Length: 211
Image (cartoon, rainbow, N blue to C red; front, top):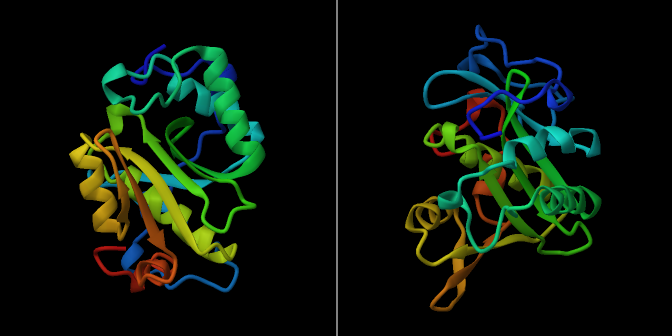
């Protein structure tokens, strides 16, 4: 199954979308809100949900990665073989904090940081290629930042292919800085004392266009 096909029934999540009538410009949040609002309007104007995931979501996340195009793999991730995909996703849930983006009952993005025992856990994010260019990866990154701040982590780190100029540009725009560079890859770091760590936790009506 490729990323543009519907998932099998056993891999579906309960169908749920952000309310299409929701107006983020008027939402000031409440004391009970999570670190970042799960409702998200993508660059096409479609309402999606971005939320923490748990082991019960593993099958749906794995379904997104099955037959993931090689052109969108980087540094060996996501894995190719189905059993390795399952092991990888399960491991991320065992040791880290995970997030998924959903369009109705379909998982269209996945992000995680691990391990939770680290002061500066490593971050990964992937989006179904059929949904690229809609701001979903950036929104998943903002969720990870918001929750990592809430959990008391000092920074997020990541490794990125040095040839992946598009991803590097997005990470730098989010505030990640290069801390080490080799011919093949870059190690990048975002201090959670950076102003973006506060902006991503603002209620929708108070956010700038960049958070």
